[in-house]
Image 1 (tube, one colour):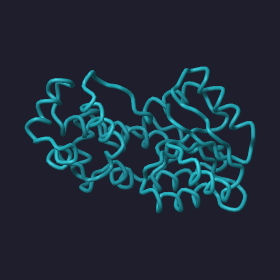
Image 2 (cartoon, rainbow, N blue to C red; image 1 turned 90 degrees about the vertical axis):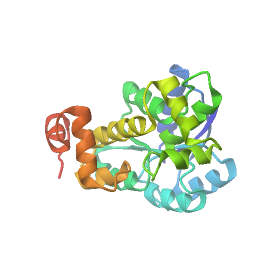
Image 3 (cartoon, rainbow, N blue to C red; image 1 turned 60 degrees about the horizontal axis):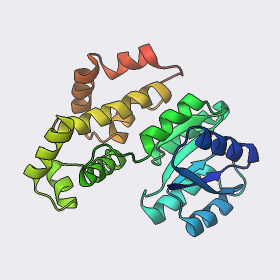
Image 4 (spheres, helix red, strand yellow; image 1 turned 135 degrees about the vertical axis):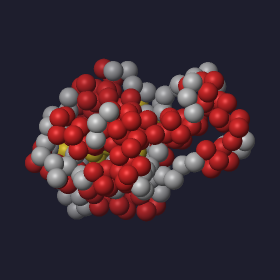
Amino acid sequence: MLRALVVDDEKSSGEIIKYLVNMNNFPIEIIGHAYSGDEAIDLIHKLKPQVVFIDIQMPVYNGLQVMEKINSSYDGAIKFIVITAYAYFEYAQQALRLGAKDILLKPIDNNQFIKTIKENIDFIYTKNETFNEIINYINNNYEKNLELNKCAQHFYLSPNHLSRMFKKYLNKNFITYLNELRIKKAQELLIESNLTIQEISHLVGYNNLNYFYRNFKQCHNTTPKKFREKHSTILYK
């Protein structure tokens, strides 16, 4: 059971999130509700939640300031999911730069809530517990400089052994899985944010823009720009 904290100056937000969690039978326990930025920081240190649903506009410290302060102490270990109104969507872009896992727009849509939770909670993928941990590790760190050798070393495995595990359980190699994950995240940002393509490329783990373009076109048979023009529902740069 994952422990989650709601940070929002509106009581109704916490009630809605709790209702959606229960309705969808997600393995999440709402362990508290903070109504201001300073209270949020205190409760996060005290309760140590794994997930924080956080609004941006709040008394004392806003959501972005809370994320900055917490990230400096927990090094990104806590998953922040931003809940915000359309009026503050520009601020949500800053939240993405601070490592927010996703953005939920108010009023929270159940389908979007389900999608966000499924993509940001560690689920069991195979019967191999070690491989599940590896996949969860990659899913939570895809934006970093991940390599097969480093990942294998992190789990005290040989690179060859890890390669065989990917082939056995996913029928694909390490780099293919990583690239598909990064492109999927980039696709979401192209649709749901107005970050520049270069910013998105960097956020999902690509230091080389040309390499990002090449991988994106390989997955979608189009460029990131054309994909955004076709699918984006907001104004973009």
